Length: 425
Image 1: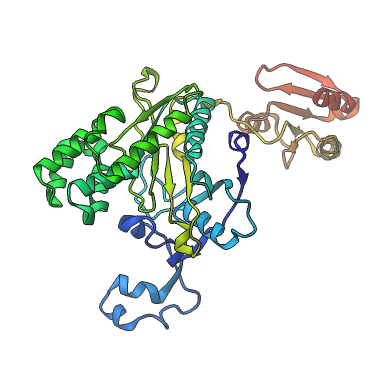
Image 2: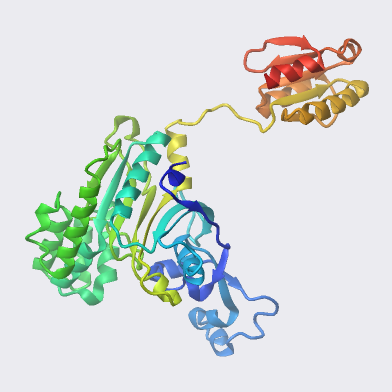
């Protein structure tokens, strides 16, 4: 509802993509986590025999695999737009809710198959898009009942740091290290920055920037073109948001360093606010994130289409909501009414009634055999149906059937017409 409130349209893309479509878009670590699909037929017949004999996995890969399962929804979306941009309204706004796959080690909050829920705008440079994405994050998590911190940074803050520290050629290494700050702490980050050749003065600059609290705090620290661009963009986003009141917390965080290599502008991340006493014990990484990517469609031959988007980590959000007991704990069933029968005659009557009720648009299930009352009620208790219709020989004879409300235990005898009125009125 929120996506469509902001003018986004639904889209789906295939589970499989060409391997070269996905490779090189997520950094070295992402490439390793791609689920590659073996070529059809006798794939070893066309394998690179030299690489095979040398057990060279990288050298062998291109000869035995040309497809992979999608790693995220953004790259396939960019590929779709590049293929169809002449038919699409530009800017094009889409939302997409589909599974993705990563060859990762499963653990809490990390899965090999999981749903992503993305919203992207492609074909617009306007930072109003970033402002609207912040609003959508805020509205969605407010509706879900999770208190979150929406972290906002700019990729050029990081490239400015790399430039000023004279480590432009080590940019991705620096980003990957800073991205670990929440997990390993500043001392370990400092040690790893030394490991890629960063000098003490440069490390001190990094420390001052990532611990700064506002755009004003970095004005005298990031003075190159990238730094100035980042400050202007972030300030513009904040200006667009002046008329909006946040339920959650929007936080400028210069330590945010999302590692995907295609980001070029503003970057986002959403985390559970553990300062909220009710959520203090939640142990979970980011539950949302994204950013602006200016050159992604250019990889597929279409230049000049800047894009920006964010993702909701559906499984992680579900885990958090489950831990906070935000779901109705009662098991639910797809049917409104479950029919239980005691003997063959009542079973045949139950079939007729099920047909009648379904023709009146009442979701109805019938236990597939007749049997003992205790066994049938044991099933009914587990099924989650709110109402159960009990039919025995007496009910068939009277043409009045026992309707039981499972939550309260209340029951009454009704004709088939009265049952239809009960559910349809």
